[in-house]
Length: 380
View 1: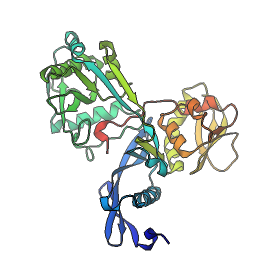
View 2: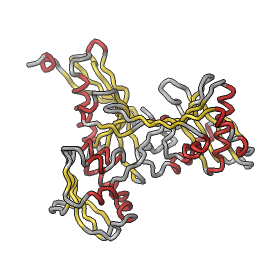
View 3: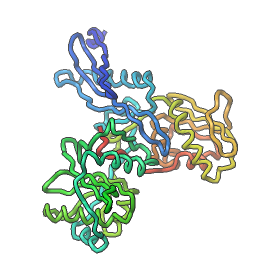
View 4: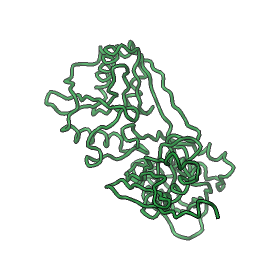
């Protein structure tokens, strides 16, 4: 019997609203802990229940004893029991793959020189700009949820759980913000950036109308001039309309793909996950050349087997019967497909992925490449 097995160990969970603090006790001492946070997250236009893992720590004098491995394994089982569909974390390299997590979330930055951004002045117009106030949050949340309604991996925000912006581009960095309003004091746009005297790091921009983009960019340029910095950095996804607008001013956009760390996800309950995203998958089929396709498909992973019936473009989960087509793959790879992180072509080169003949075109429709993104304000 190992020294670990000889000790009295148990896991306790303390529920504090949507946060569930899980502690591993050895004898009468907490040796490791983490928090599972309840989120509603988008897969395309669908909503799924996501367990965000944060606050992961083993006490210094108890490290390298296997305690966090035990707590993480127990936590995956806990999330299955509690009805989560998927889980997400922002983790260190070479650790969370042991628990079935796979990289799904690259990071993005776009850098614009201050001098180039100044050129937006000629098209900026004159709009009232003021600090964001607490009373603006209803409009801000409406902007955010409306503009991200189809962005995979974006978090659904509510006033109860998102009363204000608590962070900037990194943990411990306070945010600053402003809003643009019309002559009747109705909000047209908002922007969030680091509260800093040395940098201009923009972490969120949402507008009601694209015509406000020059005004936003010129406002950031004025900040950069005041702070005597030669450039400003946008922490925005590359397909965001404001990022695309900035291309016309000259910029450098960088996407970083961690090998086995950073933003990672895993499937918790494959059946419930597919039940919730079936409508989204069906819409993808209906909008494609497979709109009148009929057939059956089984997706088999190490955690479950899910079968679908497709009739005249309509997709439904079926029970039991043998399918005409199959896709066999690890749940980690399926999670990357669902998140839009990897292409079907890339996945099919993996040695542990098998498909039936002729299935690849349909898989490309079901699992298109997207830009999965969690806004920095929502990182946990």
